[in-house]
Image (cartoon, rainbow, N blue to C red; front, top):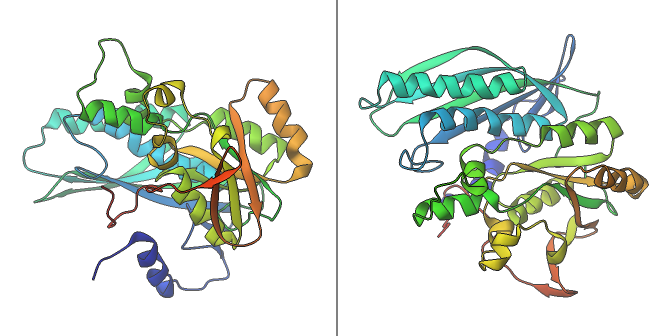
Amino acid sequence: MEIRENDLIKRLKRFEQKSGRVIRGIGDDGAVVDMPGGRYVFVQDALVEHIHFEFSFMDTFSIGKKSIYVNVSDILSMGADPLYFLVTIGIPWNISYKKILDLYKGMRRAALEFNITLLGGDTVETKGDFFIDVSMVGILKKDTYLGRNTAKTGDFIGVTEWLGESAEGLYRLQNNMIPKKPCRYIKRYREPKPPYNIWKELMKRDITNAMMDVSDGLIIDLERMMIESKKGAVIHVEDIPVPKTLKKEGREHLAFSGGEDYQLLFTFGEDKLVDFNEMKKEGFNVSLIGKVVRGKGVKILKNGKEITISSKGYEHFGDNT
């Protein structure tokens, strides 16, 4: 039997135990639990050698930073501020002390950027590939969480910064297109820092109804949001924030399906459009790319005509060739 990530998650939901304190469980970027002192968000994300990185492309310092960034991204997308984290690493016999210490230096550097505290974790030997698994907890800014299941019909769809930068960085590394000067695309692939300042402004203005991060690709992640919200979406290719280089080189598709951008994908009501446009005027890099509609699925329009994109994004266990 061929395993598919989305199907596997659906099957695993049956093991979820109901609790009065659990506000949101399996099926989102994080779980929300009502606890003394506030409502907390719990997330967990792993990076595995040969799946998420190659040592020929990344050093352990960058891997450490990335392990924090991808978890912070999940925390933010639920509408919470990150607080603490635990980390487990699987260590093969051929990893040096220096590489392990550099990994933790990278984690510490990234954690300091968000004022997050390392609480502990576990170190284990692995006979296979190296991996790092981070669990993180944050606290909701407000009583209500943001998630994949709270988009409303008629909402506008927005996204932060640029899409496709990380995938372009990976493409350049895989094809030995490494310039002597620092490259923004390669840096984005190695260290995809979440757009924290934009997130804070969105929270301050109370703009968003639903939110998730773009980790596997815009189209597949938007589909996941619409499935959870029981809605459909229409997006316009010309409004998607694609770097000029990708358009020039004919790799525009990386913005739709490349993944690992860790930008924020969100919806907001028409009553918040003025706030959204004010943010743009103030220099916050946000783009309006479509609308939430009745129905299901994601319709992609280019110059008003519907198009089909063959690769929607990355799915674990799927055919991602």
